[in-house]
Image (cartoon, rainbow, N blue to C red; front, side, top):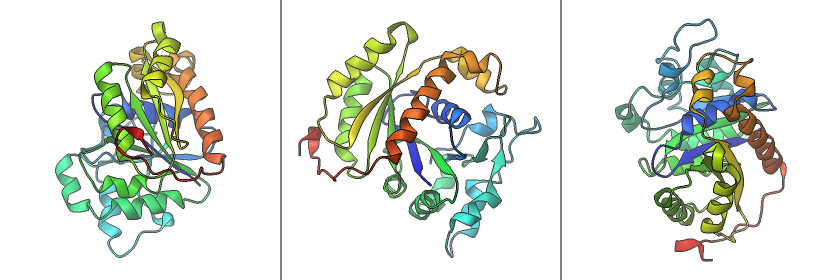
Length: 259
């Protein structure tokens, strides 16, 4: 159906937490894929459906081992696992050194994700800029979502990153303190100030450490009432609406967002 790539440029705005929260509330069938070349975190954060640990050998690493002669969407399900709560996940690499032998994989993987029948894919791509081949996956995404904290340095790096991504729709999401939630989003929108048709400030996601802790324990109850999940649900609905819209006419951007 559609590939949504979640990433950040610099700092630690919580890409894995955001991707997991969105997967938990996504209104359609979804697969959460750990695609951070630096290594995945879910095996250390979340239990599997039976309360045990995820198998680190089953996921992106095992898929890469069988995909050298070609990769089709039907192969992906053979390498997925279920998290607590029932969310399907393609577990990521254990550490960054494993990515060195898989630089060829990102393009075919992006094409397979984009062609998944009956399911969207939310890809946790971690921090951009560490693996140039990740651009091959981003090129297949229906939307690239960049997370940013409302600090001057992170927003400055975001503006530079926006000038470097040359393909597809780009959405900006502000990870904001609930005490200054709307003001932070409005300030980032003002500073980014892009007029590019395919770039949009989509809104925010609450910075909610307690909600993130609840996310590691299961779904339902207190987690459903957390600010993290409430804002993730609103953002998920907005993303699904966006990716259903016709793609905008491509606009060539130069440094600083000029066309």
